[in-house]
Image (spheres, rainbow, N blue to C red):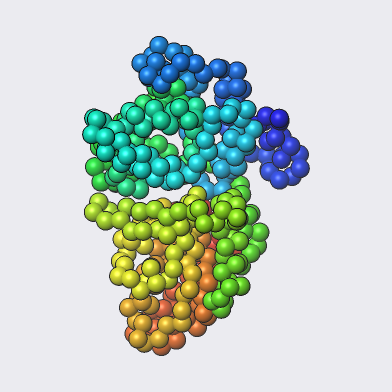
Length: 370
Protein backbone atom coordinates (compact mmCIF):
# COMPACT_ATOMS: atom_id res chain seq x y z
CA UNK A 1 0.00 0.00 0.00
CA UNK A 2 1.23 3.50 -0.83
CA UNK A 3 2.12 5.56 2.22
CA UNK A 4 0.69 8.93 3.15
CA UNK A 5 3.35 11.08 1.54
CA UNK A 6 3.24 9.08 -1.68
CA UNK A 7 -0.53 9.49 -1.90
CA UNK A 8 -0.17 13.20 -1.12
CA UNK A 9 2.30 13.59 -3.99
CA UNK A 10 -0.10 11.79 -6.31
CA UNK A 11 -2.89 14.22 -5.43
CA UNK A 12 -0.57 17.16 -6.10
CA UNK A 13 0.52 15.73 -9.44
CA UNK A 14 -3.12 15.14 -10.44
CA UNK A 15 -3.99 18.76 -9.69
CA UNK A 16 -6.43 17.83 -6.91
CA UNK A 17 -4.31 19.81 -4.43
CA UNK A 18 -2.35 23.02 -4.74
CA UNK A 19 1.19 23.47 -3.40
CA UNK A 20 0.95 24.61 0.22
CA UNK A 21 4.06 24.71 2.42
CA UNK A 22 2.24 24.29 5.73
CA UNK A 23 0.13 21.46 4.38
CA UNK A 24 3.18 19.66 3.03
CA UNK A 25 5.01 20.03 6.37
CA UNK A 26 2.01 18.48 8.11
CA UNK A 27 1.94 15.65 5.55
CA UNK A 28 5.63 14.95 6.16
CA UNK A 29 5.14 14.86 9.95
CA UNK A 30 2.16 12.52 9.62
CA UNK A 31 4.12 10.30 7.24
CA UNK A 32 6.98 10.08 9.74
CA UNK A 33 4.55 9.13 12.52
CA UNK A 34 2.96 6.55 10.25
CA UNK A 35 6.32 4.89 9.58
CA UNK A 36 7.17 4.95 13.28
CA UNK A 37 3.88 3.28 14.22
CA UNK A 38 4.27 0.60 11.57
CA UNK A 39 7.70 -0.51 12.81
CA UNK A 40 6.99 -0.22 16.55
CA UNK A 41 5.33 -3.36 17.90
CA UNK A 42 2.85 -2.99 20.70
CA UNK A 43 3.51 -5.27 23.62
CA UNK A 44 2.37 -5.72 27.20
CA UNK A 45 -0.89 -4.74 28.80
CA UNK A 46 -2.58 -1.42 29.42
CA UNK A 47 -1.53 -1.21 33.07
CA UNK A 48 2.10 -2.01 32.29
CA UNK A 49 2.17 0.77 29.74
CA UNK A 50 0.24 3.11 32.03
CA UNK A 51 2.76 2.70 34.83
CA UNK A 52 5.80 3.09 32.60
CA UNK A 53 7.14 -0.45 32.37
CA UNK A 54 6.80 -0.52 28.57
CA UNK A 55 8.16 1.64 25.76
CA UNK A 56 5.95 4.77 25.45
CA UNK A 57 3.72 5.16 22.42
CA UNK A 58 4.93 7.33 19.51
CA UNK A 59 4.21 11.01 20.07
CA UNK A 60 0.87 12.14 18.61
CA UNK A 61 -0.16 15.21 16.61
CA UNK A 62 -2.66 18.06 17.06
CA UNK A 63 -3.37 19.85 13.75
CA UNK A 64 -5.29 23.09 13.94
CA UNK A 65 -6.18 25.90 11.58
CA UNK A 66 -8.90 27.65 9.63
CA UNK A 67 -11.61 25.81 7.79
CA UNK A 68 -10.90 24.30 4.40
CA UNK A 69 -7.12 24.05 4.78
CA UNK A 70 -6.94 20.29 4.25
CA UNK A 71 -6.86 19.01 7.84
CA UNK A 72 -9.56 16.39 7.30
CA UNK A 73 -8.05 15.37 3.97
CA UNK A 74 -4.67 14.73 5.65
CA UNK A 75 -6.37 12.86 8.48
CA UNK A 76 -8.14 10.63 5.97
CA UNK A 77 -4.86 9.93 4.16
CA UNK A 78 -3.13 9.14 7.46
CA UNK A 79 -5.80 6.69 8.59
CA UNK A 80 -6.43 5.06 5.22
CA UNK A 81 -2.76 4.37 4.48
CA UNK A 82 -1.72 3.41 8.03
CA UNK A 83 -0.83 -0.29 8.09
CA UNK A 84 -1.83 -0.85 11.69
CA UNK A 85 -4.86 -3.02 12.41
CA UNK A 86 -5.77 -1.60 15.82
CA UNK A 87 -6.75 1.89 14.67
CA UNK A 88 -9.90 3.99 15.02
CA UNK A 89 -11.02 7.01 13.01
CA UNK A 90 -13.92 8.95 14.53
CA UNK A 91 -15.51 12.35 14.62
CA UNK A 92 -14.64 13.71 18.05
CA UNK A 93 -18.25 14.27 19.11
CA UNK A 94 -19.16 10.67 18.25
CA UNK A 95 -16.17 9.43 20.24
CA UNK A 96 -17.22 11.38 23.33
CA UNK A 97 -20.78 10.03 23.10
CA UNK A 98 -19.27 6.54 23.15
CA UNK A 99 -17.08 7.46 26.12
CA UNK A 100 -20.04 8.72 28.15
CA UNK A 101 -22.02 5.56 27.35
CA UNK A 102 -19.12 3.43 28.63
CA UNK A 103 -18.78 5.58 31.75
CA UNK A 104 -22.46 5.06 32.55
CA UNK A 105 -21.96 1.29 32.39
CA UNK A 106 -18.88 1.45 34.62
CA UNK A 107 -20.66 3.60 37.20
CA UNK A 108 -23.28 0.89 37.58
CA UNK A 109 -20.54 -1.38 38.99
CA UNK A 110 -19.90 1.11 41.83
CA UNK A 111 -16.23 0.16 41.86
CA UNK A 112 -14.55 3.56 42.01
CA UNK A 113 -13.42 6.01 39.36
CA UNK A 114 -14.81 4.73 36.02
CA UNK A 115 -12.35 6.64 33.82
CA UNK A 116 -9.43 4.22 34.06
CA UNK A 117 -11.40 1.08 33.07
CA UNK A 118 -12.97 2.98 30.14
CA UNK A 119 -9.53 4.10 28.99
CA UNK A 120 -8.38 0.50 29.30
CA UNK A 121 -11.26 -0.70 27.10
CA UNK A 122 -10.52 1.88 24.41
CA UNK A 123 -6.78 1.19 24.49
CA UNK A 124 -7.44 -2.53 24.06
CA UNK A 125 -9.38 -1.77 20.88
CA UNK A 126 -7.05 0.77 19.25
CA UNK A 127 -3.42 1.80 19.61
CA UNK A 128 -4.06 4.76 17.27
CA UNK A 129 -7.00 7.14 17.70
CA UNK A 130 -7.60 9.60 14.86
CA UNK A 131 -10.12 12.35 15.63
CA UNK A 132 -11.61 14.97 13.38
CA UNK A 133 -12.79 18.33 14.73
CA UNK A 134 -11.78 18.25 18.38
CA UNK A 135 -14.08 20.79 19.99
CA UNK A 136 -15.46 20.98 23.52
CA UNK A 137 -18.94 22.42 23.89
CA UNK A 138 -20.10 21.16 27.27
CA UNK A 139 -18.87 20.79 30.81
CA UNK A 140 -19.52 17.03 30.89
CA UNK A 141 -16.78 16.47 28.30
CA UNK A 142 -14.49 19.09 29.83
CA UNK A 143 -14.61 17.49 33.28
CA UNK A 144 -13.27 14.08 32.18
CA UNK A 145 -11.00 14.81 29.21
CA UNK A 146 -7.79 15.46 31.12
CA UNK A 147 -8.00 12.20 33.09
CA UNK A 148 -9.21 10.15 30.14
CA UNK A 149 -6.59 11.31 27.65
CA UNK A 150 -3.78 11.17 30.20
CA UNK A 151 -4.68 7.52 30.80
CA UNK A 152 -4.92 6.79 27.07
CA UNK A 153 -1.58 8.39 26.19
CA UNK A 154 0.28 6.96 29.18
CA UNK A 155 -1.39 3.63 28.41
CA UNK A 156 0.18 3.44 24.95
CA UNK A 157 -2.38 5.09 22.65
CA UNK A 158 -1.18 7.53 20.00
CA UNK A 159 -3.57 10.43 19.44
CA UNK A 160 -3.87 12.31 16.14
CA UNK A 161 -6.50 15.01 15.97
CA UNK A 162 -7.63 18.06 14.01
CA UNK A 163 -9.30 21.19 15.31
CA UNK A 164 -10.31 24.64 14.15
CA UNK A 165 -8.90 26.06 17.39
CA UNK A 166 -5.42 26.24 18.83
CA UNK A 167 -5.18 24.31 22.12
CA UNK A 168 -5.35 27.40 24.34
CA UNK A 169 -8.68 28.39 22.74
CA UNK A 170 -10.47 25.08 23.41
CA UNK A 171 -13.56 25.44 25.62
CA UNK A 172 -12.90 29.16 25.87
CA UNK A 173 -15.29 30.87 28.33
CA UNK A 174 -16.78 27.46 29.17
CA UNK A 175 -18.38 26.58 32.49
CA UNK A 176 -15.77 25.53 35.10
CA UNK A 177 -13.01 25.91 32.52
CA UNK A 178 -10.37 25.68 35.25
CA UNK A 179 -11.02 21.92 35.36
CA UNK A 180 -10.22 21.74 31.65
CA UNK A 181 -6.87 23.55 31.76
CA UNK A 182 -4.89 20.37 32.59
CA UNK A 183 -6.11 18.91 29.29
CA UNK A 184 -4.70 21.88 27.39
CA UNK A 185 -1.40 21.41 29.21
CA UNK A 186 -1.49 17.71 28.30
CA UNK A 187 -1.88 18.48 24.59
CA UNK A 188 0.97 20.97 24.61
CA UNK A 189 3.23 18.55 26.47
CA UNK A 190 2.39 15.23 24.82
CA UNK A 191 1.38 16.11 21.22
CA UNK A 192 3.15 17.97 18.43
CA UNK A 193 1.00 21.03 17.71
CA UNK A 194 0.96 21.82 13.97
CA UNK A 195 -0.63 24.93 12.46
CA UNK A 196 -2.39 24.58 9.12
CA UNK A 197 -3.48 28.05 8.01
CA UNK A 198 -2.35 28.17 4.40
CA UNK A 199 -3.88 30.48 1.80
CA UNK A 200 -6.27 28.06 0.11
CA UNK A 201 -9.77 27.43 1.42
CA UNK A 202 -10.39 24.01 -0.12
CA UNK A 203 -13.83 23.81 1.44
CA UNK A 204 -14.94 26.88 -0.49
CA UNK A 205 -13.72 25.20 -3.66
CA UNK A 206 -15.88 22.19 -2.80
CA UNK A 207 -18.96 24.34 -3.11
CA UNK A 208 -17.94 24.37 -6.77
CA UNK A 209 -19.99 27.44 -7.59
CA UNK A 210 -23.16 25.80 -6.29
CA UNK A 211 -26.07 27.99 -5.28
CA UNK A 212 -26.63 28.38 -1.56
CA UNK A 213 -30.30 29.49 -1.60
CA UNK A 214 -32.88 27.03 -2.92
CA UNK A 215 -36.58 27.59 -3.59
CA UNK A 216 -39.23 26.36 -3.23
CA UNK A 217 -39.14 24.08 -0.21
CA UNK A 218 -39.46 20.50 -1.35
CA UNK A 219 -37.59 17.31 -2.27
CA UNK A 220 -35.49 18.96 -4.99
CA UNK A 221 -34.24 21.70 -2.66
CA UNK A 222 -33.63 19.20 0.13
CA UNK A 223 -31.51 17.06 -2.19
CA UNK A 224 -29.43 20.09 -3.19
CA UNK A 225 -28.54 21.09 0.38
CA UNK A 226 -27.94 17.45 1.26
CA UNK A 227 -25.37 17.31 -1.52
CA UNK A 228 -23.70 20.49 -0.23
CA UNK A 229 -23.56 19.05 3.29
CA UNK A 230 -21.63 16.07 2.05
CA UNK A 231 -19.34 18.22 -0.09
CA UNK A 232 -18.42 20.24 2.98
CA UNK A 233 -17.96 17.33 5.38
CA UNK A 234 -16.61 14.47 3.21
CA UNK A 235 -19.23 12.28 4.85
CA UNK A 236 -20.50 9.43 2.63
CA UNK A 237 -24.13 10.06 1.59
CA UNK A 238 -25.02 6.44 2.25
CA UNK A 239 -24.17 6.97 5.94
CA UNK A 240 -26.40 10.04 6.34
CA UNK A 241 -28.48 8.51 9.09
CA UNK A 242 -25.38 8.18 11.27
CA UNK A 243 -24.68 11.92 11.41
CA UNK A 244 -25.48 12.91 14.97
CA UNK A 245 -26.30 16.13 16.77
CA UNK A 246 -24.80 17.71 19.86
CA UNK A 247 -25.47 20.08 22.71
CA UNK A 248 -23.84 23.47 22.09
CA UNK A 249 -22.88 25.49 25.15
CA UNK A 250 -24.47 28.95 25.37
CA UNK A 251 -22.74 31.07 27.98
CA UNK A 252 -22.29 29.29 31.29
CA UNK A 253 -25.79 28.08 32.06
CA UNK A 254 -27.50 26.72 28.94
CA UNK A 255 -27.07 24.51 25.92
CA UNK A 256 -28.96 24.32 22.64
CA UNK A 257 -29.44 21.17 20.61
CA UNK A 258 -27.83 21.08 17.16
CA UNK A 259 -29.71 18.38 15.20
CA UNK A 260 -26.80 17.61 12.84
CA UNK A 261 -23.22 18.65 13.54
CA UNK A 262 -20.15 17.54 11.62
CA UNK A 263 -16.80 19.15 10.82
CA UNK A 264 -17.93 22.67 11.58
CA UNK A 265 -21.21 22.34 9.63
CA UNK A 266 -24.55 22.56 11.45
CA UNK A 267 -28.04 21.79 10.17
CA UNK A 268 -31.17 23.38 11.67
CA UNK A 269 -34.80 23.84 10.75
CA UNK A 270 -36.24 27.36 10.67
CA UNK A 271 -38.70 26.23 13.34
CA UNK A 272 -35.94 25.24 15.76
CA UNK A 273 -34.06 28.50 15.24
CA UNK A 274 -36.79 31.10 14.85
CA UNK A 275 -40.17 29.72 15.95
CA UNK A 276 -38.84 28.36 19.22
CA UNK A 277 -37.85 31.09 21.66
CA UNK A 278 -34.24 32.03 20.88
CA UNK A 279 -32.11 35.07 21.55
CA UNK A 280 -28.94 36.74 20.34
CA UNK A 281 -26.73 34.62 22.64
CA UNK A 282 -27.96 31.43 20.96
CA UNK A 283 -27.22 32.76 17.49
CA UNK A 284 -23.80 34.07 18.53
CA UNK A 285 -22.86 30.66 19.93
CA UNK A 286 -23.83 29.05 16.63
CA UNK A 287 -21.95 31.65 14.59
CA UNK A 288 -18.78 31.28 16.66
CA UNK A 289 -18.75 27.48 16.55
CA UNK A 290 -19.79 26.71 12.95
CA UNK A 291 -18.25 27.92 9.72
CA UNK A 292 -21.29 26.78 7.69
CA UNK A 293 -24.95 26.62 8.70
CA UNK A 294 -27.73 24.95 6.74
CA UNK A 295 -31.23 26.22 7.55
CA UNK A 296 -34.13 24.30 6.02
CA UNK A 297 -37.77 25.18 5.48
CA UNK A 298 -37.68 28.99 5.79
CA UNK A 299 -41.31 30.05 5.12
CA UNK A 300 -42.77 33.24 3.75
CA UNK A 301 -43.64 35.32 6.80
CA UNK A 302 -46.53 37.69 7.30
CA UNK A 303 -47.71 40.09 10.03
CA UNK A 304 -48.68 37.14 12.24
CA UNK A 305 -45.02 36.02 12.28
CA UNK A 306 -43.38 39.27 13.39
CA UNK A 307 -41.60 37.53 16.31
CA UNK A 308 -40.22 34.85 14.02
CA UNK A 309 -39.12 37.51 11.53
CA UNK A 310 -37.36 39.45 14.29
CA UNK A 311 -35.50 36.33 15.40
CA UNK A 312 -34.54 35.62 11.80
CA UNK A 313 -33.07 39.13 11.52
CA UNK A 314 -30.98 38.53 14.64
CA UNK A 315 -29.84 35.15 13.35
CA UNK A 316 -28.70 36.55 10.01
CA UNK A 317 -26.89 39.42 11.73
CA UNK A 318 -24.88 36.96 13.83
CA UNK A 319 -24.04 34.69 10.89
CA UNK A 320 -23.11 37.60 8.65
CA UNK A 321 -20.87 39.29 11.21
CA UNK A 322 -18.91 36.07 11.73
CA UNK A 323 -18.51 35.22 8.06
CA UNK A 324 -20.60 32.05 8.35
CA UNK A 325 -21.62 30.42 5.08
CA UNK A 326 -25.43 30.09 4.95
CA UNK A 327 -27.11 27.42 2.84
CA UNK A 328 -30.91 27.45 2.89
CA UNK A 329 -34.14 26.06 1.53
CA UNK A 330 -36.94 28.63 1.49
CA UNK A 331 -40.39 29.28 0.12
CA UNK A 332 -39.25 32.55 -1.48
CA UNK A 333 -36.25 34.60 -2.47
CA UNK A 334 -34.94 36.91 0.28
CA UNK A 335 -36.79 40.01 -0.97
CA UNK A 336 -40.12 38.17 -0.78
CA UNK A 337 -39.71 36.46 2.60
CA UNK A 338 -41.36 39.17 4.74
CA UNK A 339 -43.43 41.53 2.66
CA UNK A 340 -45.55 43.12 5.40
CA UNK A 341 -45.60 43.37 9.18
CA UNK A 342 -43.91 45.03 12.14
CA UNK A 343 -40.22 45.48 11.44
CA UNK A 344 -40.61 45.23 7.68
CA UNK A 345 -38.44 48.31 7.15
CA UNK A 346 -35.63 46.83 9.26
CA UNK A 347 -35.95 43.57 7.35
CA UNK A 348 -34.57 45.33 4.26
CA UNK A 349 -31.11 45.15 5.82
CA UNK A 350 -31.55 41.40 6.25
CA UNK A 351 -32.54 41.07 2.59
CA UNK A 352 -29.40 42.97 1.61
CA UNK A 353 -27.25 40.73 3.79
CA UNK A 354 -28.84 37.56 2.47
CA UNK A 355 -28.08 38.66 -1.07
CA UNK A 356 -24.48 39.48 -0.17
CA UNK A 357 -24.09 36.13 1.59
CA UNK A 358 -24.68 34.44 -1.77
CA UNK A 359 -21.85 36.37 -3.45
CA UNK A 360 -18.43 34.96 -4.32
CA UNK A 361 -16.72 37.65 -2.23
CA UNK A 362 -18.68 36.78 0.88
CA UNK A 363 -18.23 33.04 0.40
CA UNK A 364 -14.47 33.59 0.12
CA UNK A 365 -14.35 35.19 3.58
CA UNK A 366 -12.80 33.16 6.33
CA UNK A 367 -14.87 32.18 9.33
CA UNK A 368 -14.80 34.98 11.91
CA UNK A 369 -13.58 37.61 9.45
CA UNK A 370 -15.43 40.93 9.52
